[in-house]
Every structure is written in structure tokens, then in C-alpha cells.
Amino acid sequence: MVDTRKLDALIVVSQGDIIKVLSLLRNHGFQTKVFPTPPGLFPGCSLSIAVSSNVVDSVLVLLKQHNVEVMYSALCDENPVKSFYD
Image (cartoon, rainbow, N blue to C red):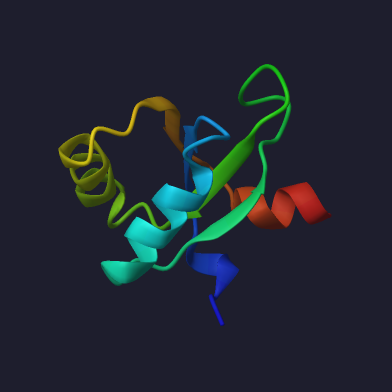
């Protein structure tokens, strides 16, 4: 089980890539959580992958190595998963 309290960075990829990215990150040992992107952070209906800010740079490098286009990434002041579900 992922401790969502430690996930304080967001990465948005295309919906077509979300399963590929989730599998890739988990296979490389990154803790992740997929949830709807908070509307105030990115326009439109999309899914986000939350990761720890401690590893977001490594995640972005890995995605670039696997030719995944990152549409948006951000470090969050508060936990976006918790904020979304509150």
C-alpha cells in the first residue's frame, strides 16, 4: 500500500500513456498513486500520477528515456491526493 501522505508532486501524461507510465514507474520501484488531476492545477479532464518530490527528477528522466511526453509536472505545497479527496 502506498503512503499517499508522502506523494507531493504531480505528473500529467496523456490518458493513452497512463497505464504504461504507471507500470514503468512501479517496475522501477517508485511509489505512485493515480487520481483525477485537480482542476485548479491543469485544465481539462485528465489523470495525474502522484509521486514523492524527492524522486520527481528521477521519474522525469525515466519517462524521457522511454519517450513519454509529460504534459505537466508540479511540486505541490500540500498533498494533492489528500486535497482532492477532502
